Length: 404
Image 1 (spheres, one colour):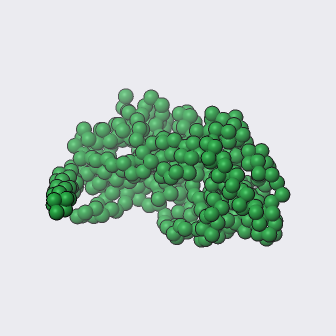
Image 2: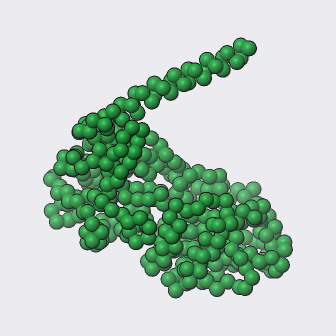
Image 3: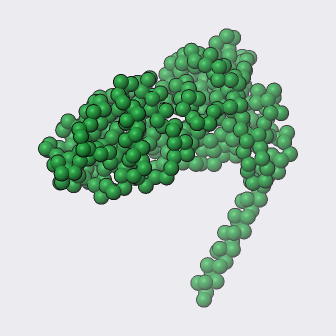
């Protein structure tokens, strides 16, 4: 059945899509934060660099919106040339990018959008450069397959693993705690005992708009500044995002505070103790030593950022805070999952996270563009050939060393 494709090119036009976008998400039961209207609106209002050159493709069946592919036009330099690059909207803080299509229409929408990109839009771009793609997405897979059928030379490569913790199996944090390995439970108890040997800790959760979000983010930034991490690419983004998320009820900013010289009075039963104060008033003399920035959206949690004061590394305050965060998410928010987003660090697996996906990068070179053909053939043929030569040289060199 024929679909009509429209292109939205302005922020004002994007705002007019809100009701249709939300309806499409609800129809599909798709509650993923990074395909929601709220996330793209957050990118518009929180990014220091304005989102420009929008190319948001909208698929209509009659007057009804049944598919969205949020793209923009950028510039990208590869090995030899500069390209007009058609990209999915996002930033380095986007762990996955994609679009939406009504259930059962994914292949039709993806194919129709690819035909539009290769047809009416063919003279506008040199390169399709899609980052952070899920490995299985029926609409995006159909989009890439159709581009290939239309003569676009495409290639994909894996970029990073995505770990997700399934919490739907656990009724309470106690049952989850019991499922953790004995070694991890002992490690958490030891961390608490070390931390409270000559001081006390306190955890605050900033989750409501009435909380002092600015104060919470100042404490977060203090922890970040005392951590091992480098400077943020967009230093104001997460503060703005925290305010935005607080307004829609999605912010969960966890901070672990410590005060030396005031031993903790509680027991070390981490599975049972009261651990959190809802609000923002922290007793005097306590300083933040660990932070975790989490989004809770439609029953799912997303772990955005984490940091801890490197002076407290021996106390494992990062792991201790991770446990407290999971307790809160299970017992208060009752979320079904926690998405760790990028990377497969050991702590994610220790807390029972499992591999959910491997995100990929896709590049498609416009066959109407001569420089795209040059670059694609170099990538497809010259690079593998040079790698074989290098491998052969290394093998020969190793054999010569062994013979000596």
